[in-house]
Image (cartoon, rainbow, N blue to C red; front, side, top):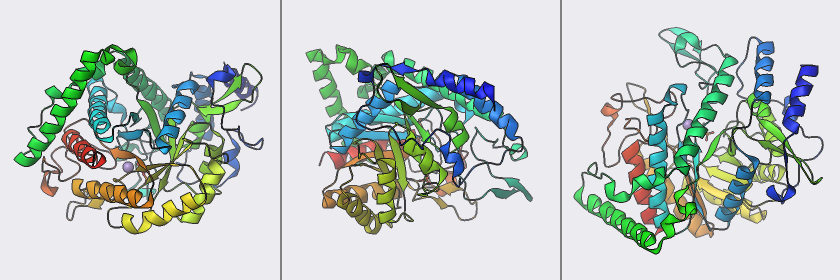
Length: 476
Ligand code: PEP
Ligand code: MN
């Protein structure tokens, strides 16, 4: 550390913005917070680096590199999420469970962006409100694991913790700090290409008239989806005729980035102090991504993750699962959002199809009862993972995922709250990781093209079909 670090910290602190350009509603955190104050707290789910000096050299270098996103974009997203909280927008958040460095390729990125755009078009049509698109993309490289070690071919090895920490290859599982630099560069490259695609009319190439629905074998369903695409086509043609689609705001779709904020030395290095030009208070932004979430395993009230998250200005997510105590959740939200700023907190519920009807209502009642403003989002993936008997392959059934979502819509309707978004592990590629859907992947098909290094994702056709079914529910 020493003088060199101080110099780097000064570099980060130099970023200034006019007051008007920055979020004004949330006050900066109390003075006892700093980007490194989490270091005094207990921290869960961190890899053990053998060479901590090497780690701090890498994080110093990360501090000197430019941000991946801009504070104004982060503020825009928070404002949009405030509109979601008010029932005026809907979120599609999705992407890989764990991004892989090898997938930082033109075709893979385009496939992800394409499915996000197609799904969001279907959802806008169903929800009749604008969409907010957030990718689990451009930085989703670190994973909490239920166990630190596993046995592979009779040998005990450290578990794979994401490409930014160690390799999937069991022979190369030692955490390596250099991987954090790679993660930064892969995230930046991905974000750069996504920005290019979004601003250059890529969205226009995906007119629904060109969508191939031949994967839907059931003829009634196929007719139903075709009718929906025809209606969407008519709506787009109408907008074209009115000249709306020539408006730059229509052609330049936005895709925000997000990841689980897990590895705090990395997140600390991505934290920038943004000073105001006119003497307003400085704010701390994590400019490694627009949106970060706290995982189900790291949301301890007195833990390091909550300490770190309370000080950043970004909109943040909290995963809420079967082990979440509603009154503790209320305290957690109050700690992370003392000013109750709309758009600051998104609760990402992931109970599982069998539990959601019993466990979601008390959570909604506690949050509503405390007068807290949150965005409600459903992650129907993480509560529905199962292992196939015999092979032990991890999978999820399309039907369980869909049914958790439908139950979540019902519960919110009963409680008078707006389910503001959906969160999927999905990909634009033709993988076989989740079973079911019209394409009919069975347990036996899973090994055909199972690529995920971590949790199973909906493939291209399962994702598109999911969007049709949600749109149908939204348009009721
Ligand atoms: C995830 O989103 O990949 C994840 C690990 O989820 P959770 O924290 O909800 O288990
Ligand atoms: Mn996952």
